[in-house]
Image (cartoon, rainbow, N blue to C red):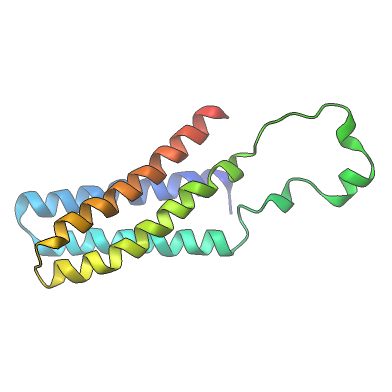
Length: 139
């Protein structure tokens, strides 16, 4: 998976879901709100695939051959790779997907607590978004 895809795709999903949910609230359309929750669930599934698929693994950055040949003695920088900085964002996206499931169920049943849980889900998604933005600024 491409590095650019790792940080752009979740950002698009976050804003698509937030836009659809807010539009559903303003227009009073339940279908749009449920669609937004579905997008958050897809974001959580994507985060699970990335986390379990070893796309953010640190083993890809330092091979045993580099250590054995002592190539690191020249200049050792304390820079963290972008993929490693994205790990907390993907945990946040996974939490977003998990929170979206009960939120969607409560929205489907027209419960008043659905809005509170939807706001918490959106905040978890925005936390992940801003972690990605911070990681991109530090690179």
